[in-house]
Length: 246
Image 1 (cartoon, rainbow, N blue to C red):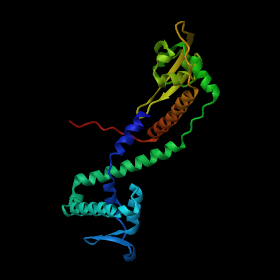
Image 2 (cartoon, one colour):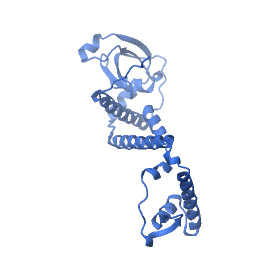
Image 3 (cartoon, rainbow, N blue to C red):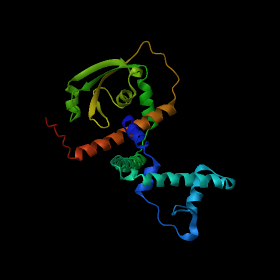
Image 4 (tube, rainbow, N blue to C red):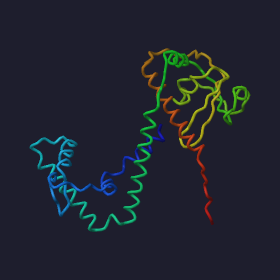
C-alpha cells in the first residue's frame, strides 16, 4: 500500500501546535488552575497529562511547569504578532484539518480489512516456486472468463520467483487460462491471464517459511480490499478535470 503510506507520511508532518488554535481550551474553574500566564490559565489536569505523556516523576514537576510556561509564552507571542491571521497560517490549519480527516478515515477503513489465508492457499503458492510461468497482461479488463481466454495483450515468460511480488501473488491464485484483476490505488486496475505453468530444470528447492508466505498473502488481500474500496469511491464520484484556459 505504498500510495497510502505516502499519504500517511504527509499527514504526519502536521504539528500539534495548530490543533491548539482549532480547538481552544475551555475556561478552567479557579480551584483547578495550576498556572496563570498573562491571564491565561492552565489546569491541574493539563499538568498531570503532560507529566504522564513524557514520563515525568513527581520530583520533575518543575520541568513540566517550565515546558508548559515556555509553550504558552511562545503561543502568546505568536498571537501578538498576529501570525494566526496570516493567510499562510490559515492554509496550514486547513491542511491539518483535512489531513486529520483523511488519516482517521483510512485508520477506520484499515481496521475493517481482513486477510483470510488457508493452509491450502499457502501450499498453492509454494507449488509455483521453481516453475516457469507464461502470462499475459490483457489490454483491457475482460467482462467474463470466456472473453479472457481469447483476449489480446502483452505476453511474458519468466521464473515465478523472479517476478515482482504483486504479480506473483496474483498469478498464484490462478489456474492456466484463468485471469485475475490487480487493483492499483489512485489509478485503475489491470488484468493478468495465466497461460501456462512449467517446471524449471535448473531450480534448486529451498526451505520455505510458511508463516512469511501467510503474512504476505494476508497483506496482499488487505491491500486489494483497500484499493477496491478506493476505486469504488472514484467510480461513484463526479469528477471533472477542467482544461487550462490559454
